[in-house]
Length: 147
Figure 1 (cartoon, rainbow, N blue to C red):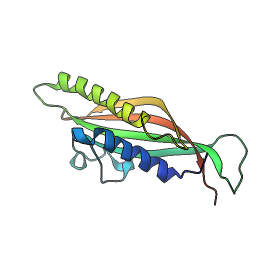
Figure 2 (cartoon, helix red, strand yellow):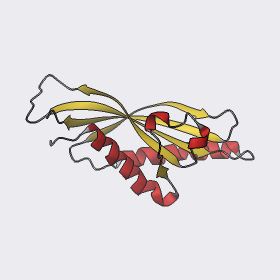
Figure 3 (cartoon, rainbow, N blue to C red):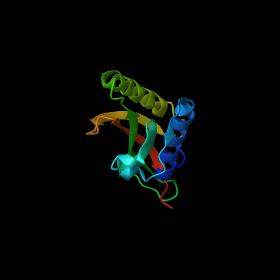
């Protein structure tokens, strides 16, 4: 297994979602992933962000020349519009979109990378009922460079 940086993992997943779902109008957010969803003026429907969570070594073997195997948490957040006159239908469509995002992430090139679905910790509807914000967490395993 060759080395793959944490940024490389994040970018690979972001690029895959864009490739698979871009034809359906999906695009990645221009804002830092940690801020995605905090300001409704910054998000639009079918926009997503790939955030990196923790990175933890797997096992105790760490060699500077070849790196070390780690688990890195990825968090994908996305927004979906809910129309006032058809919120339940749009909510169900947002849940279907969630499955599309999962499928896109799981189809990411697995060269030097292993991805698992971890959890879907929350699904939020904004107070005004206009946007659904989904969050999906994945665990990845890759070799982190130590040089």
